[in-house]
Each structure stands twice: as C-alpha cells, then as structure tokens.
Amino acid sequence: MFESLSEKLKNTLRNLRGTKELTPEQVDSALREIRVALLEADVNYKVAKDFVERIRLKAEGQEIWKGLKPHEQVVKIVYDELVELMGGASSRIVFTRQVPNVVMIVGLQGSGKTTSTGKIAAWLKKNQERNPLVVSTDVYRPAAREQLRVVAGAVGVAIYDNRQLTDPIEIAKNAVRYAQETGYDTLLIDTAGRLHIDEQLMVELEKIKAETKPIEILFVADAMTGQDAVRSAEEFHRRIGITGVILTKMDGDARGGAALSIKYVTGQPVKFVGVGEKYDAIEPFYPDRIAQRILGMGDVLTLIEEVQAKIDEEEAAKQLEKIQKNQFTLEDFRDQLRQFKKLGSMSKIMKLLPEQLLGGIKLSEEQMEMLDQELKRTEAIIDSMTKQERQNPEIINASRKTRIARGSGTTIAEVNKLLRQYEHMRRMIAEMKRGGLFSRLASRAMGMGGAGGLSALMGSGFPSLDDEDFSENQSFAKRLKKKKRHKKKRR
Image (tube, one colour):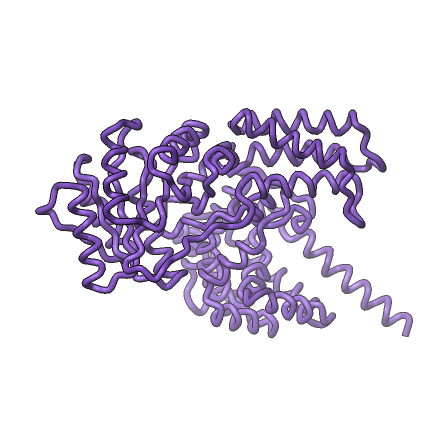
C-alpha cells in the first residue's frame, strides 16, 4: 500500500540531501512535488493544499531540531504532518460496562462489510479478550445472512441467526436481548448496504441506531475506490454519525488517497485496515507506523508483533541453539521456512524493514515474487529427501540427487545449489562462532521484545536470487580468516 506515493515522496526528500542550507526556491520546488504526489495518490484536493501549506509554515518558521540537517528537518516536518493528517494516535474501540456493547458495521454494498464483521469479531476475541456475537440485519441481499454464518464459523465466533424474523429492526432488538441473556459482552451488527446511498437505507440505519444504542458505528470503505469512499463516508457521517472507518483492500491500494483524506474530511479516524483475504488479515490503523512506511523508515514494531503472534518462540529458541552449536540440519531449515511463511510474502516483510537496515538493497515486486517461488522450491527439494538425507546431507550422491530433483519437480543443478548454500552457511556460522560474533548477534536478537524467533528465521541466509549465491557471506568469511592469519603473524 502507498507504493506510488511513498516512492515519489522519498525521491523528493532525497533531492534535498547534501545541502547545508535550504533556500526558499528549494523548499518551493519540494512542496510542489509533494503536492503533485498527493494529488496523483488521489488525495482530496483541499487536503493536499492544506497539508502543503502547513509544511510551508513550519519550514519557513525555521522550526529547528538539534542535531538534524536541513533535509532531515523537512523529513521530520513531513512525517509529523502525515501522522497528524491520518489522525495522530491510533484509535481503538473503547468498551463500556453496558452489556452488550453494540458495534454497528455500515457501508455500501460490496465494500466488504460482512467479512470485516467476522474479522473484527475474531480480532476482538483474540486481542481484547471480548466474547463477541455477530448478527446480520441484511434481509435484502440473497444469502447475506448465510454468508455471515459461514464467516462466523470460519473465525470461530457465535452468531445470532433467527430465520423467522424478517424485519431488520426486530432482528437487531432480539439479538441485543439474546446477547444479554447468554452473556455475550459485544454484539457486532452487519447492516444492509446498497449500491448507492438512498433514503430508505439511511432511515433503517437510524432506527437500528436508536434501538440498539451502539458505542461505535464503523463505516466500511473499499480503499481502492479512493475519493468515492471518502464522499460516502462523509454522507454516512452526516446522516447517522459514524465513529470510525474500516478501510478494506489496503494491500491492493498503491495510492492511499482514502486513508490520507478520510480523517480530514469526516473528522473520524481510520480504526482498522484490511490487508488481505485471509480472516486474520486485519490490523489496527497506526498513523505513526503508516507514516514511517510511506517515508521508507519501515515498521519494525509491526514486524515484531507479527513474529510474536505467528512464530512459535519456544521452537525458534531451540533452532537458535542448534545454529549456535552448528547442529542446524536441512530438516531444521525446512521447519523454519514453514514458520517464516506464516509472516506473509517476502514483499510484505521487506516493506516493514527500514531502508537503512536493507543497506540500499531495492528489490522489485518481480524479484520478491522470485524469492517467494525459490523458497517454495527449496521446501519442495527438502521434502523430497529422506529423513537421513535431511540430517546428514553428506550422503547425498549423484543417484540420490536425481531422485530428489525428480521428486521435487526441480533440476539437479537446483539441488546442488541448495546443498552448496547449506555448506556455505555452516562454514560461515563456524567462522562467526569462533570469532565470538554470532553469540553477540544472537543475544541482541533474543532481546528484541521477545522476538527471539526472528534471529533464527533470518539466521539462515539462503536461498538467493542467482547463482552468485552467498558471495557476500563468502567474502565475509574470507575477511575473518585473513584477520585471524594477520593476528597469528603479529604474535
């Protein structure tokens, strides 16, 4: 998400580097480029204009931060304004003592209301220890109530589904009563939508609101519709008073105009974003983290949270211990590949890492897809080995390689490449261990907010994109050897 805007903003700010003092002409030029970048990202015209003016005021007011160079000051201003534009702090659902706490999910048809209802219910159950119940009041769209029943079953939350009731207001009232009687503390109401805003829809939503007294009314918008989503949110807010926004399909929105405009136009924050089709692909919206991603600063906090949530830390610690003892087998590597895949695609992970940490490495989407495919091929090759071969690759001779290649749908050259990389890795770890470097790196990684698994995940530095695999690692190992020889000569 935000790919096109991110690239343009980073290029604009990069052009300011190296200047000892920013001239008014340079600031004007940068602001023009920022304004164009925002408009091309489908940001509301008034939003883009005010955003640029606020940056100009701060830049011309010479708000100086100690230790920052001129171009860094501009980056700081842009970052602060981006955070403010998107709402400042993250806005979570705040619950009261009332039982149940009602959350209305509203929006136009096709925006993703039903799936979002299930996703949020599951998220609240896992992350805020709520006991949610879901209900659909959409009696117009064929199979709408059945769709929510399927989603609720898939995410493991309860549903109120009385098919004898056909009036939306009665369904909502009965669902509230049922939640009170059975001890559900949260009720999410998946309301009906239309292809466009009409009076009948708004009157129905006003009646449901009056009957259920919701603590939150969340408007679901398709991020890819850009300013259409913003205009719809504005109208819903005018009629029924929304308290927050859920943006779906953010993973497919390269522009990000809706996310950058919606808080400014409606006054209500984005609370959740959908980042994929899977039922756990929903995240709270953190303006500061999003601003960091846009400006290439990465989002390490989100990455650590992903690792903590999806990686078996006890297993990762065992793997790390094996790496430290240089007892890491191909079987262990396969297990780590499977854990690594839980974090998502290579593209997603790379976007969460700061550009400085990547050392200027920039991979295209095609290259990252190639990496994902190569990881799959690596797993297939290891799967085609026997347990004995995985634990002791030295026994793999020519005939075994032929069998492994045939079984994995790869070539003997690819099998050889994997075995070479594995051997390089073992030698490199041995060198690092003898130099004491590995233990220092490992202990530092183990202290990353409980994300010990991350070190083990990243510790196995293969596969690579081409046959010049591990060239950097090899040169690193050679430098270590040379350093040792030099020390011996001095002695």
